[in-house]
Image 1 (cartoon, rainbow, N blue to C red):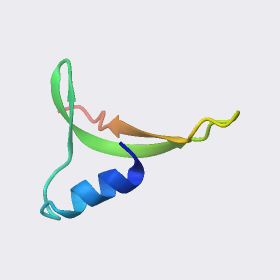
Image 2 (cartoon, one colour):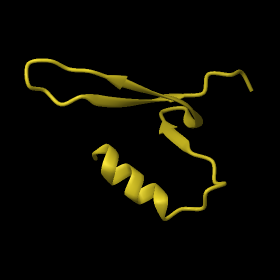
Image 3 (tube, rainbow, N blue to C red):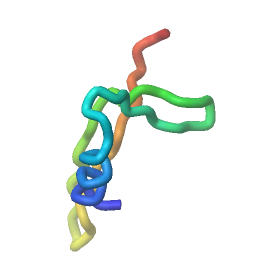
Image 4 (tube, helix red, strand yellow):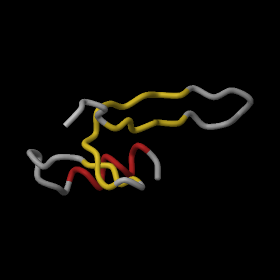
Length: 55
């Protein structure tokens, strides 16, 4: 999925909805977004980071 596709998918959802990431231990709230720049002709990547705040 590209950033444009993600934005398009999210644009159809309620603006006040929480974004959760699914993992092996269940669901975590989205805590951040990082851009990873690649070289050698590889596309850049976006990494969605879970919120690591203790419950």
